[in-house]
Structures are given as C-alpha cells and as structure tokens.
Amino acid sequence: MKTIAVLTSGGDSPGMNAALRAVVRTAYSLDFEVYAISHGYKGLIEGNMKKVTSNDVSNVIQRGGTVLKSARCEEFRTEEGRAKAAKVLQNNNIDALVAIGGDGTFQGAALLSKEHNINVVGIPATIDNDLVGTDETIGYDTALNTAMEAIDKIRDTADAHDRLFLVEVMGRDAGFIALETGIAGGAELILLPEFLTDIDDVKKSLNEVLSAQRRSSLVIVAEGDETGGAIKLSEQLQPEFSKYEMRVCILGHIQRGGNPTARDRVLASRLGSAAVKVLAEGHSDVMVGIVNSKMKITPLKMTFGKKKDINFDLLELSKILR
Ligand code: ATP
Image 1 (cartoon, protein in one colour):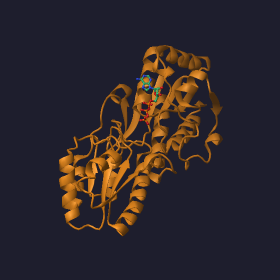
Image 2 (image 1 turned 180 degrees about the vertical axis):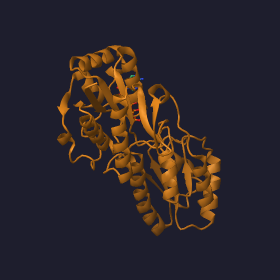
Image 3 (image 1 turned 120 degrees about the vertical axis):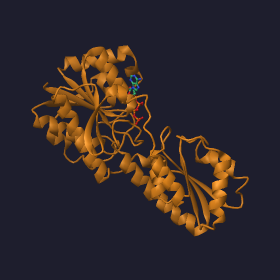
Image 4 (image 1 turned 45 degrees about the vertical axis):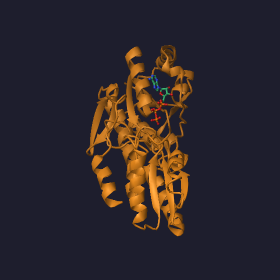
C-alpha cells in the first residue's frame, strides 16, 4: 500500500484536526502519500481532494471543527453514489480510505469496502460518545467540558435568584454528555434518553429537592429524553411549580465547538496514528478504538446499529449526590 485518502464526515467534533494530523504524519513516516478529501463523502464523489504533506497539517492540532470540512451526503447512501466514489479512489490510485466520523460514516465505509473491495478504516469522532469499540470518542471530552463550564455559569445566576433551571444538553439518542456533565455540574436531576421518564417521578424528585431548601436547582435534560427536551419539560412542570422562577437554557451548538481538550488531542493523535498502522499491517473494514487504555480494533459492522451502554454506577452516584 502506498497511497491513502482521509476525510471527515457527519457531525464535526473537536479533535478531528488532531486526528487528521496524526494520519498524515504517520503515513509519511511509513513512506505513504496522503490525499485529503474536503466535505466528506460528497467531496469524495466529486473528486474534491488534494495531496497533502506533513507541513500542511501544521498548526491544526489545537483547532476545533474540521479543516477538511464535513458534510452529510445522501448520494453516498446509494449504490450509484458509492460506485462514483470508488471510481475516484481507483482513478487516483488510492489504496485505502481513512474515514473520521460516527456510526453513519462507518456504515457507508463498510458498504464501500464490501461493494468495491476498497480498504477502509474508521476513526471514531463524535461528541455523543455513542460508539461501541472505544471507551471514548474524539470530541466527547471537549463537549463535556464546554457543557460543564456553561452549567457552572448558569449555577451562579440560578443561585443568585433562587431559580430552577432546566438545562438541555446534546444527545438525541445517548445520554453520555447529560450524565457526566450532570455529575460534574452537581445537578439535582438528570434525564437521559436511555430511560423512560415518568413525569410524576420527576415532579416527586423535584419536590424533594426544593423542599430541602436548596438555594438553586439544576435539572440536566438530554435533548432526546422522553419528555421531549427542556422546553416541553418546563411546560409539563409549570402548573405544579409555578411559584418557582423556572428558566430553560438550551446549550446547543456551543457544545460542538471550541479548541479540543488535551485529552481529546491525545486520543485523536493515538487513534489517527493507529488507523494508518493497522492499514499498513493489512487490516481493513475496522474501526480503531481505545478500551481500558489499550488499542483495540473492531470490525466496522459491529459499530453500527448497536448502542453503547450508559454507566449505571454513575447514574446511581448522581442520585446519591444530588
Ligand atoms: P454523527 O454521529 O456525528 O452524526 P455520523 O457519521 O453518524 O456522525 P451521519 O450523518 O449519520 O453522521 O453519516 C454521515 C454520512 O455517512 C451520511 O451523510 C452518508 O453520506 C453516510 N452514511 C450514513 N449512513 C449510511 C448508510 N446506511 N449507507 C451509506 N452511507 C451512509
């Protein structure tokens, strides 16, 4: 193998640039050449790529977002779209593709490999941390810290006015961000998509917390929680809790941005480098991850359509500490 291509796909996450840098520099250390593809699978289909050197990835390790740009691409979901993508790779004598993204990205990569016999390897990068085969995904730690800092600031103002704040964090299908920011931010209640939320239980817990005369109360709601998110939850709570000043705060896209934390930069550097090494060793159709501090490769087909379990111990801990 001599030439590889790399792209970022799906939702961007802080640390994607650090992963790109590690892919490029490890490739050159093994005498491979690298094409960088812009705008994910859309760019691949359009042949939007250029050869990059180690110098081209200088000064990116600290930057959030993705310098390669990301995109969602409907055409790649079709056989015709993937055939076009394969042709572009073959015409440029590219032997393998490194795809940095989430489970959708890996599903697409696995089909490209199966249908056109192209070597692919996935690097898990999504703020949601919802991929099996790795303890953490690239971007998760940064998103956690961003959300926690915002929650700390909300706590200050909540405290000053004896308010009840409902804070919505990202996580349509997974509650990792909600659970860990809830614990780190000292939340009184944490609502996750992984569990059925009974509104009467929520009211009961809130009444217990409020009757304990706390100066302020914070409820962390994952956007995919059964209640429908913080706004819908506030509408359901309003009648019974009208004597409290209730405020809703949706953290939204600030959780995606920002410079990656040291932990995300190191994770991305390790996984970016490992992706190239496993390709050089002859593996394909796998995702690289780190489990219990050890590098692990997982077949791509095991990474999608599966849900990573939330840590139940942490959930119990949050109930004890509230
Ligand atoms: P995130 O978790 O951040 O959303 P993701 O990689 O799961 O990242 P998706 O939008 O699901 O993001 O997928 C990215 C791209 O991968 C899609 O735009 C599409 O081009 C491709 N893709 C996703 N699912 C499939 C599939 N089932 N078949 C082929 N290609 C797919």
